[in-house]
Image (cartoon, rainbow, N blue to C red; front, side, top):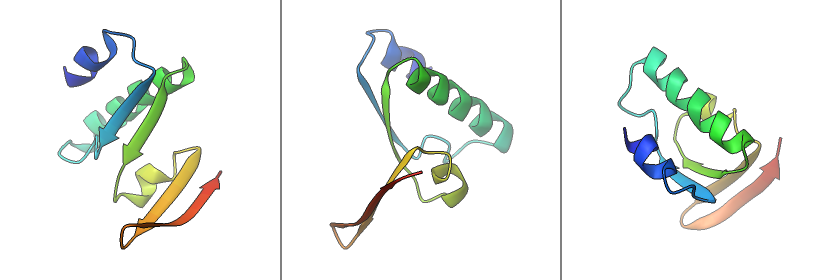
Length: 75
């Protein structure tokens, strides 16, 4: 529901903070597939996660440590 509300106004960017954090694996996979489809359609997706498997799906990784950028790279 929140994703639907977020995209109804056709945003240029979606900020997702732990978007699958409280979901079972099936629902989490569906949410990520939806977010990836939105990203493929031209919407920028910025996601914060502690899940390395989820993070590995991203095209770019910016890693922070102690409030600073530790690394910034593309996959």
